[in-house]
Length: 129
Image (cartoon, rainbow, N blue to C red; front, side, top):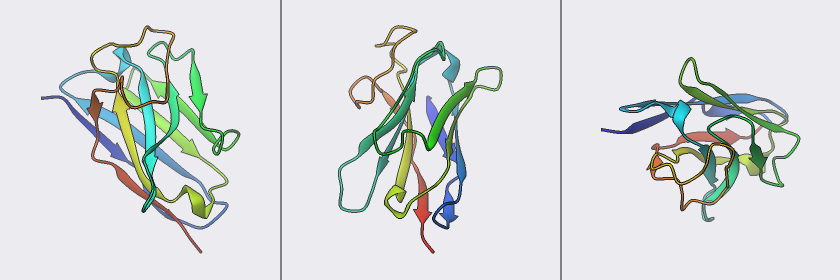
């Protein structure tokens, strides 16, 4: 059974940092593009960042550009989202998703939900003083 697990969420003060991790069981993340999405209370889920299976392409939402960095360690089968200079508006549940059906070529990633077939349960990030 394919399973994705996020970790690293928590409570942090504005201006602080967190690093989220995404790992999988039942398959290996290194073969697929990975996306991070988030959902704030009362809002629709939105794309935060994505990375191609090759690691050569990354994309970021406008609200996180310059503050968040996505990376992957294929040897460990893990994808990371480094979040710096956090703001209260970054609060939400963060989801990791994998293009486990291979909809995207190795150099591609997009921050829309449709190509991502496998999703984690999410990890809560709260930015508050």
